[in-house]
Amino acid sequence: MIKSIGLDVVEISRIQVDIEKYGDRLIKRILGNDELQIYLKRKDKVQFLSGRFAAKEAVIKALGKYLTDKPILPDIQILNDSTGQPELCLAEAVKQNVPDRCFISITHEKSVAAAVAIFSEEK
Image (cartoon, rainbow, N blue to C red; front, side, top):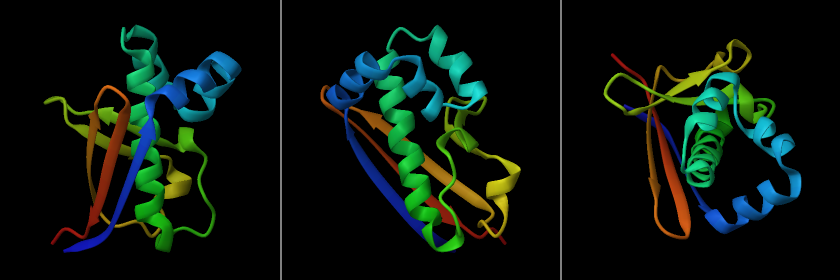
């Protein structure tokens, strides 16, 4: 049963400008440790960061009714499973009262990155 849905769209050029302005500080405010290691190896760094930012915002929107405080972005990691599918990894502090399962989809186009997060209760 679907419990909540979140959607976010990000202009890739906005993320590029922010990286140029804030550099590593911005990247570390968005990515968790595991994501950062992946980011550093990527050739498409701006698209990767844009997609992860959109996915985290989609997760926060979907979790809105379950959260008492907005989590920091590094506490929400979007990693890939063995098949390459995005998978949500929440810090313990964020997991309380959160539905069992989250489905995430991330897409990139020339100028935008978008993501959707769908939380469901598994039976």
